[in-house]
Image (cartoon, rainbow, N blue to C red):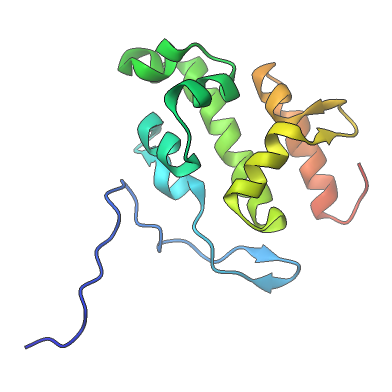
Amino acid sequence: MNDQAHVSEPNHPVSPRSVDAPMAFGLAVEAETLREYVYAGERIDTECLRDALKMSSRSLAGVLGLSYEAIRKRDRANSRKTQERMRDMVAILDRVTPWAGSRAQALAWYRSQEVPSLGLTAEQAVKTGRSRLVWAYLGRISEGGYA
């Protein structure tokens, strides 16, 4: 008889234990990335994203600057525009989570902290198609630069 306790994985497309630990302040940290929970093949699953961020579909739609139907209806959720916005948000949140300390704090930064060189929050930049500018800012910061 096997004495080991059975540990069940969450019912998500990719196991959260399959990636290398990120670095925060030069130390390896065990963290589960948002990307691991939400990707179903090449697409982001809106229900998984909503659950991972602990928000309603309406709130997620608002954060992304999309209509509720764009999140709720499968064909619209799989559209290029919806997927691109979700992909940008997930990438930015995964990048700042080790610095912020938690996914919730990263989301708070994403929604409220103005990026000095843009005069916009990361949320506003993603909504207006300027996520590359947020990436450039995060790259400068990660290399020890200033805003």
